[in-house]
Length: 249
Figure (cartoon, rainbow, N blue to C red):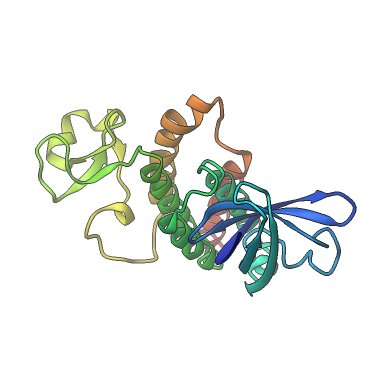
């Protein structure tokens, strides 16, 4: 058995004296593990850092075997990611979310979203927006997608500013006004047809994390006996500290 694919390093653990088991999210083969000979050594250590993109060749005698990877770096992001606290927390959080996916099940949309998110980590605000969108995409992939295209109460597609905490459906300003204190806020960057901009407020980002965090916890994590990772909290706190420094120098 042999295949070649593009992948993103999610994690690595030592195996034996000198090898390592590397976990990739690949474009065409999903979340997939493989053994890298010499992966525990100093020569390959820079390559096998979470967040790096690689060209992967996987070989095994049978498809169900762990198999062996031969990897070549295509985008070495780790040095940049390790230089800032929000990126370190963010990559760890994204990897923990990707591990919710079943092994060896192709997830091209998740792969493309992860790649875009990692590419935007040099801009803290945009990184936060992309992490929220990644969480939203994960909810949809796991069968718990939110319906943000039209109002759950009236069917209108405009002026959607709330989300029902029960159904996950968007709610318009007019329909939601009587229950505004019980509804979640839908941040501008998640609204259908909203203009793209890069000046999200701290409140916008908080609203986004509260929205995706609520549904991830209730529908995905708690049924598995899990909670949000410490890395998610660390990422959110790092983003807020950065925003505070920028707005109040």
